[in-house]
Length: 174
Image 1: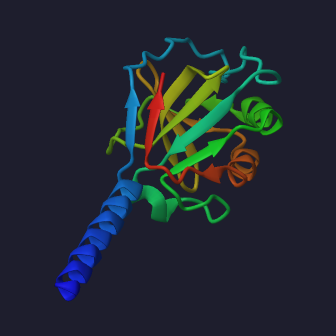
Image 2: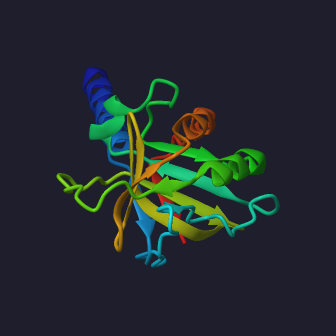
């Protein structure tokens, strides 16, 4: 009877650990559909989608979700975790100032659709979200322009390197 109880507890422990590991690789992100702002690029094809938002005050944060299949391609400085978060307003403002993207060509063919995303919050309200790819370049996807590429890659990676992992694999985004 005692051995059976130990075996059952051990099996429950294994199931709990396996479930947590699965959720680590596939976190549950609960959010309303978010419509991106449609914008026009300036004459030099540069755009900062969060340029007008003041992140110096308030309860602000950035969450980066990286699909588990893309973790292996993250730059070495960025923590290899599916959910990363930053709540430091100085770092968020630094990200904002370097969050400049350029449309390189009309002829770039989309060969894949990334599940990775970046979320910006101002006073705990979602103000910007986009599909994102982060490897040897940082790219955002916009409905009206397609993929755009970061012009300040090193500065953004430096900022992203201090983001903290989110260990609880379920997050709600309003």
